[in-house]
Image 1 (tube, one colour):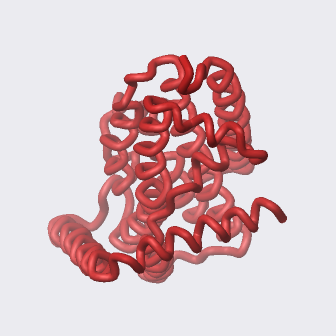
Image 2 (cartoon, rainbow, N blue to C red):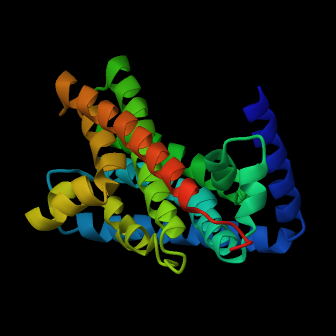
Length: 261
């Protein structure tokens, strides 16, 4: 209950901040629609010259774009703004106030800043997924849809856990400002299925910087390409990654010396 109240409070504060710059919000939404149009145009150009891309059809690529935008929304709405704030708080000592709060510090660092207007992206992402699945004309069962949802959530947990580990390194290396640069740079790889990339890059986006786990893998489940063991493995990986991230975070907190040092 306390967590929900805090989330509600954070959301209200960030809504008020967004409403203070209404024109910026409208412009950002329009720019977002423009980029979506460009992404769809790019896919259309590609499929004017081929029927499949890495074994995936146009409808499946549109659905994949929707999943990518779901993950990307989490990154832009939560991870990027809170990364900047967290790095600054470590340097100037204001992290003290976060640690002293009677709430989980990892939770506060994650949700203190929310780019509220990005909720619009979530709507667009769901629309793209539904349209893409319908265009692919593939028969999907309730079990496949449920697996898709679970793997999408687990993929986001993996990305989130990686982020926590990367920013936690700032506890040891205070000037480690570019802690999520690699994650940000490889994010665009999630726009396309991992099968289109060479083997070495496929390994990177699946196991090292697991963008594909959050984008390609859920769609593979929707296509019926994953076995029960594979699904359970990916779900287990998300749980394990979160536990590791939590442990790294707690260990990093012990290294934090505060503003008085």
